[in-house]
Length: 365
Ligand code: PEP
Ligand code: MN
Image 1 (cartoon, rainbow, N blue to C red):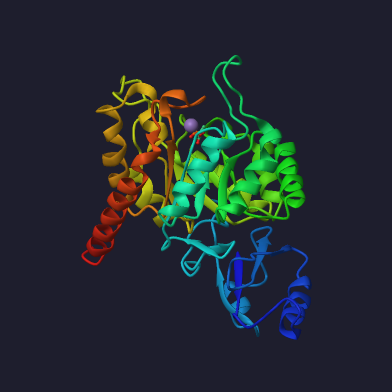
Image 2 (spheres, protein in one colour; image 1 turned 90 degrees about the vertical axis):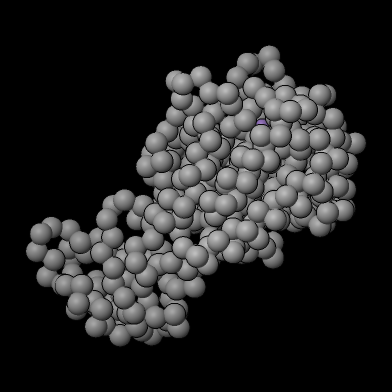
């Protein structure tokens, strides 16, 4: 059972202490106070052990300071909607992330040269965007492919981000020590930007990594759906992150692999945007680049990215993670699916129009 306290009850208040004292009288209750920094209300989670609970939901609801007690199933216990808990979202680096917000994270699959990175940040600034995607640690299918510059590129990358007013970079981590490397590099650079830790599709059920990003509170997490996992498996994986204390999570759909020989690398699963928004309180991101993959090439095939993006935005996506490169043909990773940087203004205009249409259509249903 989760108890939601009245919004004005803090952990320091007398009502809170009295309530905890009262609950402790029942030996069959296991009580865990959840730290939900981004949530406007405090939560207490109470596990009832045994059939005979001795204390009922109604009794708890009548205690001072308790606004609501909700019985929650084991499923998506923290991230699920569960009736009253609908106002979930978080603030990071002055930006709001919720099921109402909308952000675009554009950039290369992998950070390569200083010049290319600067060109990308400059282009983002010119069109008024302040979020980027950048890979320093790359999980590649072949061990002989470019694996990313790793921590070596972080100092100049963060300096450049600061110079061009980039507030947040989504960056994949493959192992817990990558989080520390990012933390150290940000500190050394004087925290010029924020980082959202990306969990890639290949690590979608790497539970130790999920627990590691869940334990740290410095960075929000962008969790990408596993390409061969059901939605339920992925929502449970996101719940792993939350269960360790970090509920600043964005759920990202990026296509799933089928046996049907798709014209694209993965089947676009953006019809699941409203489903994730209905089942959980998470903002939902779409990645149009990875389902398209290298199967389509410029100049014609790459246009699919626009149409696929439109599907996700019309479905109610709260963010887009999309690959752009100044010279896609020279990119060290995922060049064929990257849009040329010169198209950034066009992409933005396109997306803004689709988003406006979505907001209009939303009023109808
Ligand atoms: C990426 O975003 O560059 C990436 C590797 O994505 P995914 O994990 O979805 O394949
Ligand atoms: Mn990529």
